[in-house]
Amino acid sequence: DFYIETKSEIHIEELCKKLNGNKNRDSNFYVINAIVIYWSQKMIKQLQEKKLKVSDFSDFFIKILKMLDNDNRDHLINSMLNELRFPSNQTIFFHYLMIYIMNEIKNEIIEEHIIRNIIGRLIFKPNPWGLVHFFVQLMKNGKYVIMKRPFILKNKADELLQKISLSVKNKKKKNYISN
Image (cartoon, rainbow, N blue to C red; front, side):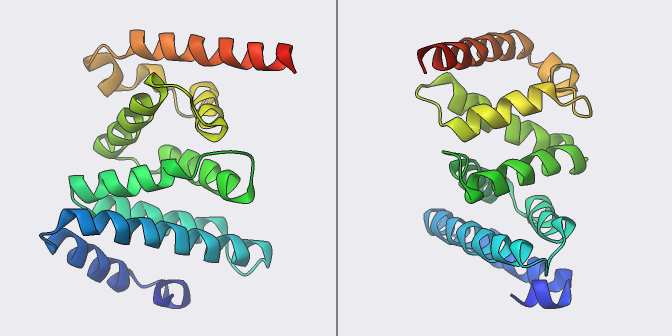
C-alpha cells in the first residue's frame, strides 16, 4: 500500500530483502502468493476506478522480479502463472501483466525463467485457457520474437516450442469445432 501511495522503491527493497533473507523458503511461497493475490485485487479495483496507470502496477512486479533471488522469483512467476485460468478480470489482468513484463523486463535471465515455467506447464495437460491464450499471444507478438531468443536457440528448445505451439493450435481448432 505504501508503494502505491509513494512510488518509492524502498518498500519493495525491504520486502525483497525480508523474503530473500528468510531461511524457510516454503513459507515464502505462501507470502508471495498472498502478495500477488492482494496486489492484483487492489490494482484491478484501482484500474477500474482509473486511479492507477498500467505502468504503476507493472513496474511494481518488474522491480520485485529483478530484486528477488532465483527461488523466490520462481515462486512469484508461478503465482502469477497460476492466475492465468478461465476468462475473468483476474486472468485478463495477469495476461496483460505478463505480456508487459516479457516486453519490458530487458533481463534475459528473468525472461528465460518465465519461459521455462510456461513450457513446464504446457507439457502436461490439461492446460488452463488463460495459459494457452497467453502462450499463443506470446508466440504471435512481433515485438517479442520468442523463437529467436538466445536462451531458446542455445538450449535447442525451439523444437519443443514448435511442438507445443502445434499442440496448442490443434487443441484450439478441436475446441472450436466441437462447440
